[in-house]
Image 1: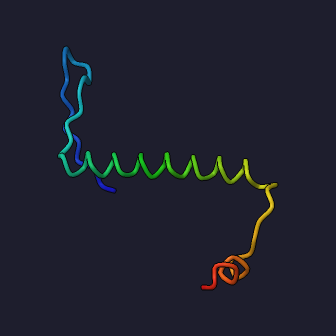
Image 2: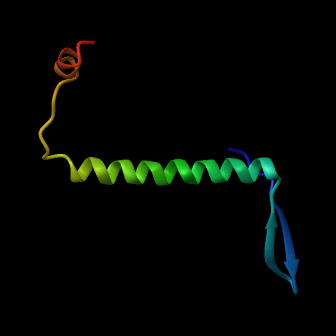
Length: 64
């Protein structure tokens, strides 16, 4: 992802960053993906000791 921020200063200090809306949406999507990944990893860790059923057995039971 390439960003092209515009920095706005106030009293000689960096105060604000302005991004294009497209770049903002890219950041928003990346953050959502990151949150999803964290949740997936958490759930995977919590369920690691749970019994599992092979996909072919589930498919057979569902007549697929």
